[in-house]
Image (tube, rainbow, N blue to C red; front, side):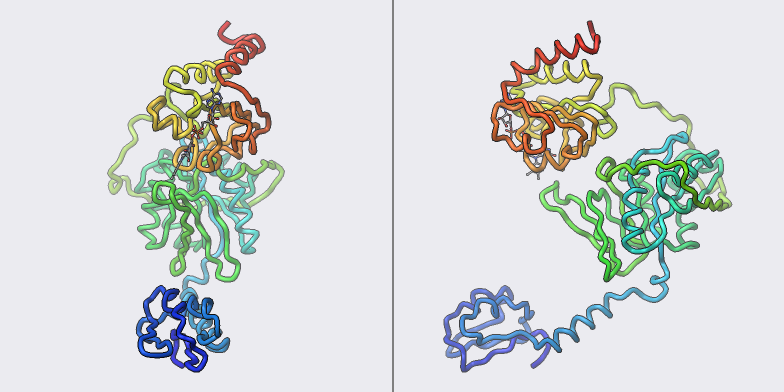
Length: 416
Ligand SMILES: Cc1cc2nc3c(=O)[nH]c(=O)nc-3n(C[C@H](O)[C@H](O)[C@H](O)COP(=O)(O)OP(=O)(O)OC[C@H]3O[C@@H](n4cnc5c(N)ncnc54)[C@H](O)[C@@H]3O)c2cc1C
């Protein structure tokens, strides 16, 4: 029997035709007698074998299958020079020596991966006067920190950051590099992966490892959130991923932890760097930073219209929080898309999430269910939002919200 062809026992065939219907490759034919297989088309995927009522079809023997698995494994095996790549690296993102919290979240996640693969977790710090950041990275779980402390990398610029990271990677050969899926992280990761000629998955929301192959399983929403794609980088190293902020858990900081800071030098040539940072403009208060908010008051279709959102805004203001929304409310044009929480919006993890008039569709839940405390207000007691709520209020939001706002005003003495 040749490889990739299903075996047929003609004497058992009752010519029922079920296998012909089941074959996705159109490789089987019943014309003029027992079933026949077209060897060029057959992929031996076994669907015909499963439906055959008389066991007239069979797949390769176990021995053949084992040989094939071995062959596939051999094909999948990394070239020897790439097998030396070891360690999980997390890029510690800083702007004006303030670290993006996603970097610490990634150290927490990186630790799990490093433990799974029995390898070391390291942080990468690029900046100026950044020794404190290196030590902070250790307190969040890095065993080693590679530090480039140089005025040239004080502020982010794609060219010198890429040059520095590529140099470190080529010297120390990490197996996995994680960066936050921030504006900076996305810019840098793309440039570094291109230079290293390796694979990068952007905007991941789930990371897992396959122990047998050591592949990082990088899962991210794709096609506008319609599918979750799990992507592997089988033939290249390092495996690179950017990860959405607030998806991974923040690890506990332990300042008593010790680790090694390895200072490296890169001889940058300013003449080769085409960009110059003239000014860094502070975030304006008006901007929406849902992923950083501690308190979010979100409204959905139940809010009814644009005016209804004034009530949501009022409660958010009283609590010093930010306004969130479901996609239904955004699609209806009641609130801009920057406020959207969920699979195709922002993932949030506030201390308090108040959901008013939101049913709790899965695409909304995945963006907020990790909030510390969830309060749901809905007039339908069967709404799925109550399944994830810490506290639920069944009622009309137009009746529930005004007294709530008044009570909070009194309690917090805000806006009074
Ligand atoms: C690919 C894809 C991606 C998506 N991405 C997102 C996403 O990122 N974020 C997102 O939110 N959705 C997303 N969706 C849409 C999602 O499936 C839901 O359609 C959406 O979340 C529903 O929003 P909603 O809960 O506001 O509206 P509905 O499901 O219509 O729920 C309204 C709720 O309000 C309640 N209600 C009505 N009136 C009142 C009242 N007076 N007082 C109290 N309660 C009241 C109702 O009982 C109901 O439970 C996505 C969908 C797809 C297919």
